[in-house]
Length: 448
Image (cartoon, rainbow, N blue to C red; front, side, top):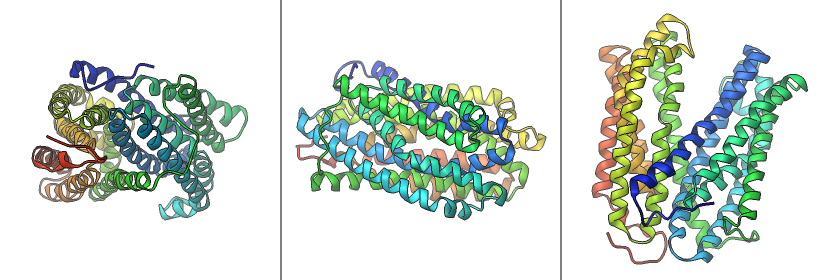
């Protein structure tokens, strides 16, 4: 395993080679639910597909919380990586491993017990609820594996290795593609087979990750022990707001959907198709945000502030180039892309118009990921949480409502786009003038 030291060397080259595997891993991670949906829809029918779709909403919410907590781990471990203190890194690895194991077990038990109640709260249709409960419960049984292999990936990225986690995720997705039809159809397990295939794939990825890190001695793991009080407090201090950041984003998207609903079924269908594409389109920006978080974290720990700001500059420029290219492609292929998900003419028309309008605002949402990633690397989790609240609840949701009230359904896209611009301005202002440089997670002299 080649671990990259981000405190020295050409920044743009490091950013490209470090972020590209993260982009691919994010794409593969998203594909889990797509693969299940594809096989279930073709082998079991529409009701079973609906059950998977609704259950996947709950699973993705849990995954978003896991990603948030892992962002806290990325910040702490990347700073520890460059403090020339192996005992500190080892100690925090132990603390994270113990706390995440306890959290995953608690979530798994609670999720299994309350799966049916959660699905009823989501107004799951009666004809789908029994299958949805089965699918969701099996996924909650295997949630330790989901936590596990995501955490190992985060550790390796914090240490400067983004290529190895890609191999684990790739192996898991290939296994899922193979096991889904085997479990669903050949073994005649139905929808439970799809869930077992996902859990088994994630479990094997977790085991492969553990074997690799132990055999290669790539990560300084130790025998699990009760973590120190100050370690637990710091992890909770960063982990809770980091997890809530993703919850705010999901809740914000749900709120915006209420505006879309007011324009009828065609708008809902078209917006749904556009959102599926959006979830893929923003993956490069998300990967760049993760990359600069790790890169900046190592440099913040060493007080290399000039290099931190260079990472931010190169990150912004790289984001602009990538997202503008994506914007041009989306603008040209909008109608074709929407038709991959929906065929109804008025829904396609809405979805394509939405994408064509919002496409050239994508670089601004990318700026949010880059600048918030830099700020988050210092430990400013509550500040980034506040920026996300401003972005979704003070800007995007009200703007989509008011602009669409004046100009009609196309106002949803314009409201979203204007929200991207203003929220990126807030992120820049905090990056430029905020006190994030003064945050010290560990006792050391900080200068900016």
